Length: 403
Image (cartoon, rainbow, N blue to C red; front, side, top):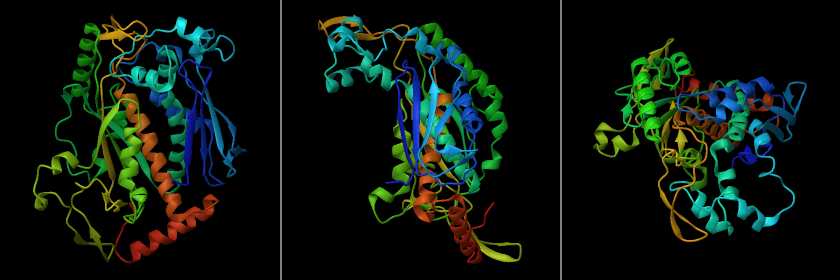
């Protein structure tokens, strides 16, 4: 288990989204602004629904930080749900009981959502108790916790960034196929784009696809890509399934609502090619009068044998279309077993640009935990000292060159 534990609580229309982060060393500078910056990024993106016109996500740090610095204890973060004022009766915690709640809830599940399976699992007669927690609103808390992990990684010289590479059938062609140089991507243009895509003409095509889906009462999915660079070789391990970092990263990405597939590096393309065209060869390069090992390609996506190899970690995740449609699909009323149309809840047309911010948070969480797993340290000073010594040793042996 990672030394950093990130847990969340809260319902979509409840009063708060809550995150608790355990395991962050003492001495890390951390402010509410560090977290609010990431929360604001999550709210952006063309295709978002009415909820984002209601919310202005800002956090309150309740515990674990004193005078702007972490103190080693669990960090508790609260983000209010502004929309709760419109749901105070439906989301009250007292009175009524399960049958009273069921009488006012829809019992018609949406295809593709957690509604049906959740009703069966938790013996519910309505979908409200399921959709409230299954809602992607929960990812507000993940992004808050991921922002804390991102701050820790920044102290270690690690950067995590994401972009959108497709919306529906509109896809970025070419790009950095070998995943070697994060600086080849215009990350400022990514942040300026309403679709989180640096290609201006492709952004317009993505917007047009979203508009067309909205007009049809439909929704769209897509693919986002997360990069992390500045990572030392040797995070994770090959010695057990639990310690393999690729498994932890893929699991983290798969836990994001709507994500149904993920790949590291060129995984799916690599599966179609012979090994001679896939594996990243080693070469020797002279740099600053010192010889060292380099890799001209990064088709492995920065991970080999469950460990980082010093190249950028690159992960792509596929997000399905949002299950709530304004032109609802066929369903069945679970209470009567009569044919019906699926329940309609206010929703986005697409949320892929926002999901990429959640993806960054999840990758930051896993990688920050991997650093603490390897180097330990109850304080930031201890952690940095150990990581610095390890990096110096690798550089002295020509096995890694810090950017």
